[in-house]
Length: 443
View (cartoon, rainbow, N blue to C red):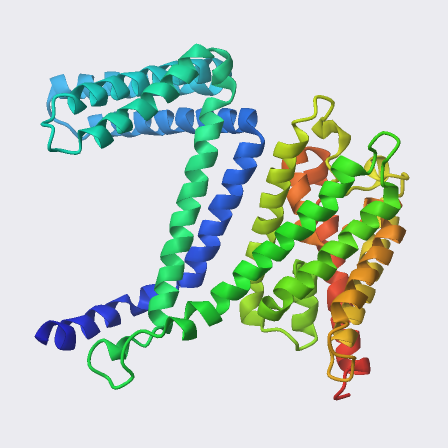
């Protein structure tokens, strides 16, 4: 009892500064997971990035070894550290200059290491007494043994994707760990911890914590944005040009409208159903959304959209004729506009259409509007916007949707991505302010 009444409050007080940063931890984890999904979507490029990072690390380590050598008084150790440092630097430079050759060598070492590790674990498992969990030890050896065998069996071709795949998986798990840690801190903050130390409130009330807090909203936004991109962009990538039965522009526009309509009904009661960084910003500008929650909403919207694009890419790659060179439903202007429209046309269209979209959203969700019909009006508006905007920019009005596709297409899509953040955000602010000061109930 002395422990719970005296020590626990001190520990909770010490953790308070850390709990205050839970949102940053969740955001950082989400960004790591986002980077992981991008890495898995382009494993060859991720392999090159991994190898270059190893090369740079070797060069830095070598320089540190050389610098440390001059702090040693022993000539023998001096020359030893100089030699080690030079070997690191030369090796690092070689890796940077020949990343694919280095990838082949590192993949070979990785595969051999996994096989050796697996064999040792299996051998040790059969040396354990029968009353010990030897089977789990054996299984922990079989997994790396099989994985290493697959890598070696496909070497050197496997060197093109193995390191990139490992990087992507590692980033996703690291991101999940950071997000889990941040959420657990939030749950601790929201719980009625005083109940543990003898307060009459009587224990943890998780329903008043994470379940009804920001975490639940963020999950709903993630799922809603995921559904919007998977349904909308999926219809464009898979169904729009399908031989003889393609749904065309009209079908794609309707698909985007239906995803927002259904998502708003499913997830709107939890998070408000934004699914779009521009919508969140416009609602905040209109005084209908908290500025403090804007950053976390943006993060999960981009992550949800990117995860949907990753799933869509996995599906599309099952078709032998698929290629990212086809655009992958990315947004663009000039040469990458479906009808060749200029940057100026694209900027005007994205700004004006997003402003109108926000005014419709704000109007149909006010108290004077009929209850229960808002998602229908919003979905139909987005359908109409796509009917107008698809020939111009492939229709964005949603920075998360544009970012998710551009991350996998790369090149021109990333170079032109700025427009599909700046124009929709500008239009959202214009629409939000116009409604707030001219059309709102309390004007």
